[in-house]
Length: 351
Image 1 (cartoon, rainbow, N blue to C red):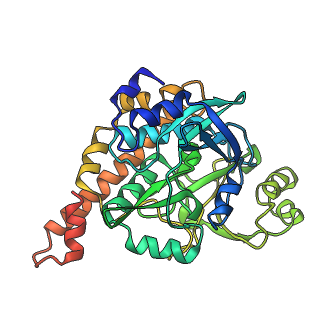
Image 2: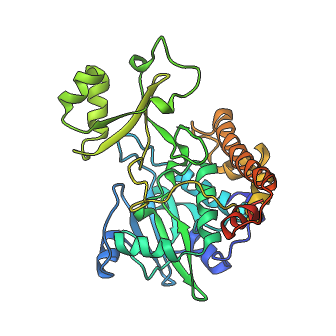
């Protein structure tokens, strides 16, 4: 581990956990599918995910750092950075995650947190969301917005119970490296494909979210007819398992930008990466976020292409959006000369 990790105080990470994740002998390494099926849970993942069982009996989730999706680099370093960010800032919404080499393969190794719920079951997911602690859910949503984790869907959330309350923990955080166009309070647009033919002479100076269009995924010929042969082939590969899916998108500045979960307004299969509530402690934490802290968070990933000044600017820009949003909300309420309702008090408590 990096020397900077001495700053971390994690409620899940005692010394025994740390030893297992860092150097613990692995007794077995099998597909996590077997683990899920034994517990009658739905299997829903695309990249390779393995269950590591240590000789101590503790278990972890190992993801080899290999690209398996057409537009996802699957960076293990991103998984570790998400944990470090969550812990250093006091969010505590990502399980302990370290880099590890097992059987000659390098990847991310995350402590497996047992959940009695199957979040991939839509009914259980919705029930858990309704019953989740407000502070916990808001914390994860603010974390997701600031660090760009737009893919908080059913299989990427754990629901955990402590002292009779339900809390959320976010897993599978590789998407924090995605290039995005965001506005707090709306689903982000994510760059799915960059190509020179997507550059337009009349590209607007600002991202034209209000000009978004919707397409229904069909066959490869449909993509080629609409976007040209080369781009069409790439898009057909990206959406090859998504026949019939509606894709809300914008073509701008050389990129094809998709707005994931644009048609999940009632959050049946995902949660939004924003909240109307900002816990006081979380506000104070993100106010401390700066380039130096980002350097600590991504110190293990400085060799990765995505770790650059532009990437850090995007994170700090989203942090500023959060602070401005709640500052405006607070100012607006201060100007209202009537008795505040409970809903008002929720937003007021954010500041």
